Image 1 (cartoon, one colour):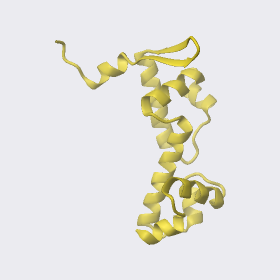
Image 2: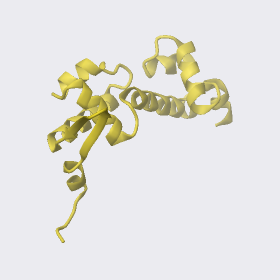
Image 3: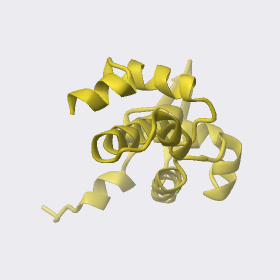
Length: 134
């Protein structure tokens, strides 16, 4: 048998069904572009590019980017961005004395009420209650 490495599985990533008789085939360069998009989102979590801009940045059409990202990371691009923001916010709440307002700004929310709502949806408690339990 030939030796396998982590990248072998990604090259043969396969097909994604996107509807009745519609299939997207991912190539190794598509996988590379999807990983690059992931890295861009991670670095720019507080002001992520929209899908259109992101697809241009990684030279991959929007449909393939969205479908491939979801298949590869098991969440949508928007869900991933929120996941990063909430993890960073939870860390800041646990390790700093920054106000809720300051933390919401740091993770890219213009309104702390929207941040608090998303945080509660993610962790089951408000940022303030989360901080008090840490």
